[in-house]
Image (cartoon, rainbow, N blue to C red; front, side):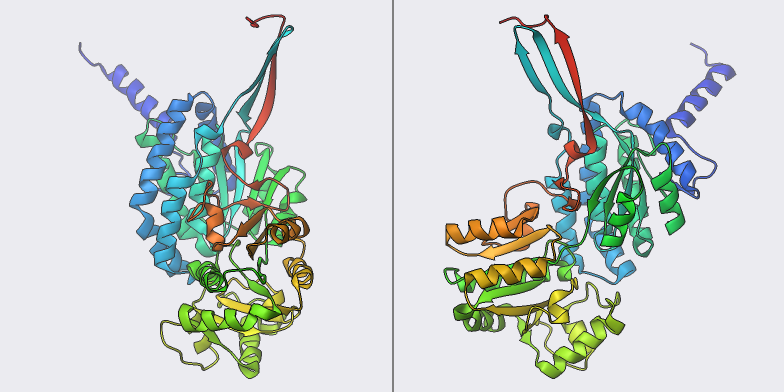
Length: 462
């Protein structure tokens, strides 16, 4: 059959429409100069995604997972270079964790009731275009994890990434769209702007085509989202305490706590930020932390010097966040071997290096007279964030009492904190833990709305 000029033009138009190439695009898939254009492109893509079968969506997710693994080292190095936070090795592990353990379409389920009066179904449907705010601490991990869950639910997503990690975030967003195109899906299933600002964030939060906002970041970001008038999912701050009681395997507790605290230089919000230990085990715990787990004890003078640096002017010094222990000690003129992983000291719970969430491998140890005192101190230190907490104990009653008192979205028992994300523990992975708004560990089902379908007096064949 001969191909005429009219047919060629039709084919070109179809391809251009499929790829949704915008004149405002910056050259990377899903990246625009204007937030309104980004939302419009995501809305157009969502019209395609919501009509796709679960199998078609899953093909896109499979491609995203593959590309995440293939680019894990690139993304890890980009994040460290751009933000100066964390370390490449742990970030590579986090990307593989996202690829392997983030739920997809299997998380979208149907509930059914059948009886004498017919059949009723509860199905999970998409919100549409979701607005997402992502941090600089886990930039690409959050973008990729959110994208998998949101797309699995039939949504598309517009990101307003932290400006301090925009290059890494754009790279991840581009990967998501490349994966969609390779799997036969539309472009712009994940979008962003070239230069995210507070203004672009406000446009996104107020836009009529954004029914749901998911914010992963500090308390200020979450408060802004909850004040937007939209449905909000808020993943905010934490200050997770690790409690060690008299029954704990102290040697294992020391190893687990240090491993969790130092993972990616303490950037994960779930990581151990301080220790509360009952008096009889403190000295033994410190011994194992120093002798076997690369900890360095700082004295009172060094504590004061470190406080002045990391809490400069009473505020968290962003240049210290996610730095390793050797670098932090070097900032106060203390030279230590490269095998030093964590900075420790003993202090009262009110000590600024203990009470403040630092996101650095610094562990203050608070001594408690007994278990009840330890629980009281740990609850105070968690500051009501209801985010994460940890305990090392072989006493079920103690674990239960602590769990009820601390009331967090995550409670890890006798393991490093990262077990909560499925790394050395059971369960799925997420980098958006919505403690403040109550969703807890988010997954694909979190980003859907429930719809009831009722067939009265029919389709019951019992």
